[in-house]
Length: 170
Ligand code: HEC
Ligand code: HEC
Ligand code: HEC
Ligand code: HEC
Picture (cartoon, protein in one colour):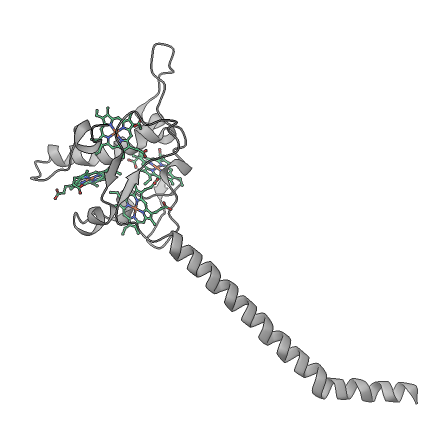
C-alpha cells in the first residue's frame, strides 16, 4: 500500500513536477550561462578596443626623465598600414603566435623592467637580452628600430628618429 503510493507519487512527479523542474532548471542554467558570457564578452571588448592614440606613460618608470610620447596607434595601423603583429606578440618556441582578436597585454607585462643599468659595474648584456627584459630597450627597438629601418631603406616618410621628435620638451 505504502510502496504503491510512493510509486504513484514518483510517477506523477516524473510526469509533471519533476520534468517541469528539470526544464526550468535547464532554462535557468542556460540563462545564467548566457548572461555571464555576455558580461565576459562586454568586459573584454571594453578593455580590448584598439586605442586611437596613447600617451605612453608606463608605470615601470618611477619618474619620466623625458616628455611623454604621444603614440598615434590607429594611424600606425590604418594609415601607415602596419600589421598588428609588427608590434604585438606572444612567443612560443621562438615564433610569434599572437593573432588579431587575441588578448593584448601591455608591453610591461613581459618587458617588466625600466631602463637597463649603466656604468662600469653594469652587467654586459646583449641587445637581445636587453630587449627581452627592459621596457626601455624593447620600446625603442620597436619604435625607433622601424623608423630607422625605413630611413635606411630611403622611405620618404620614415617616422621620427631623434629624441625630441618623440619626447616633447618637458
Ligand atoms: C606600431 C606598433 C603597433 C601597431 C601596428 C599596433 N599596435 Fe596596438 N599597441 C601598441 C602599443 C605600443 C600599445 C600600448 C601598449 C602598452 O601600453 O604597453 C598598444 C596597445 C594596444 C591595445 C590596448 C592594450 C591595453 O590594454 O592597454 C590594444 C587592444 C591593441 N593595441 C590592439 C591592436 C590591434 C588590434 C592592432 C592592429 C589593428 C594594433 N594594436 C596595432 C603598438 C601597436
Ligand atoms: C606576452 C609577453 C610579451 C608581451 C606582452 C610583449 N613582448 Fe616583446 N618580447 C617578448 C619575448 C619573450 C621576446 C623575446 C623573443 C626572443 O628573444 O626570441 C620579446 C621580444 C621583443 C623585441 C625584440 C625582438 C623583436 O620582435 O624585434 C621587441 C622590440 C619587443 N619585444 C617589443 C615589444 C613591445 C613594443 C611590446 C608591446 C607593444 C611587447 N614587446 C610586448 C614577450 C612579450
Ligand atoms: C613597423 C614600423 C613602425 C613601428 C613599429 C612604429 N612606427 Fe612610428 N611611424 C612609422 C611610419 C612609416 C611613420 C611615418 C608615416 C608618415 O609620416 O606618413 C611613423 C610616424 C611616427 C610619428 C610621427 C607621425 C605621427 O603619427 O605622430 C611618431 C611620433 C611615431 N611614429 C611614433 C612611434 C612610436 C612611439 C612607436 C612605438 C610605440 C612607433 N612609432 C612604432 C612606422 C612605425
Ligand atoms: C620613435 C619615438 C621615440 C624616439 C625617437 C625616442 N624615444 Fe625614448 N621612449 C619612447 C617611448 C614610446 C617610450 C616609453 C615611455 C613610456 O611608456 O612611459 C620611451 C621611453 C624613454 C625613456 C624612459 C622614460 C623616461 O622618460 O624616463 C627615456 C629616458 C627615453 N625614452 C629617452 C630617449 C632618448 C634620450 C632618445 C634619443 C636618443 C629617445 N628616447 C628617442 C619613444 C621614443
